[in-house]
Length: 186
Image (cartoon, rainbow, N blue to C red; front, side, top):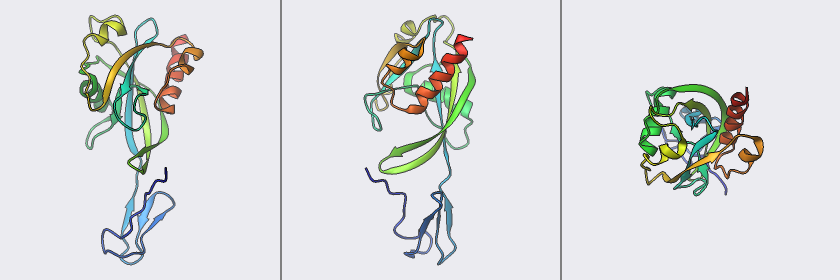
């Protein structure tokens, strides 16, 4: 699919000379308009039990509908990454996680409706809610945000082969789960 990150006309003066310079900003030489296409920030949360079972969501929408993803999404304006992690879990799964711990981050390219967005994906590990010991028990209490999540799954990831077998929607989730797996082995 061809993606289009260009304006046909300058949004300030209407001129036709607008250029997407250096793959990061729009510039119009007619009126000196400059708009940076800054990196968007997103969060994902690894919720796992002591046996190595991880909570995954089956995506209900594009991109990568039907593939598995970690709970998460874009950070809202005036929101911290930590706050977004809690909010996304609440919105997508009615999940009240107890605490989050930073795990890692990776740059990413996210295609949505033929626009390419450069993102920085921030990954957290979260504790299960009090009184819940397994991901299977957790799933019984979750409610999917139907526009985002088709269903939930408990997937065992205790080694690289199990990780490689999971049909994940996004490569960065695989990378982050690899980091989590290495730390878990220590």
